[in-house]
Image 1 (cartoon, rainbow, N blue to C red):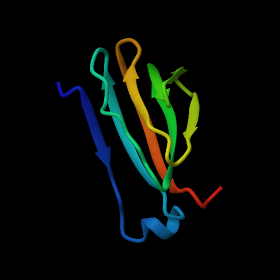
Image 2 (cartoon, one colour):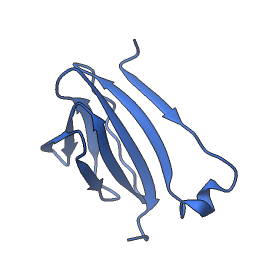
Image 3 (tube, helix red, strand yellow):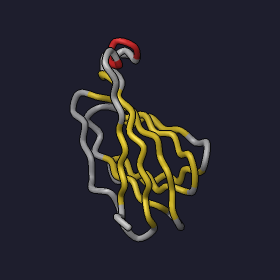
Length: 99
């Protein structure tokens, strides 16, 4: 199994329907962290669908469980990892200008 599985789906007109947001589903496997991320111009919206996720933002660690959400501000380096077993995360991006 691949440590990080991503599924993204876009449809025609999706950008206007979601006000520029894009969604990605990820499966994280314990022991294999996703690469560090940095979105200079976009906020990252996270929702844990299943499992427990270790979110590290600018070297500060947070544990998120199923149903928990987080917003990582644009320009903040961050990473995700499973904190035990398999975890599933829905992530979205939005322009930093949209609040």
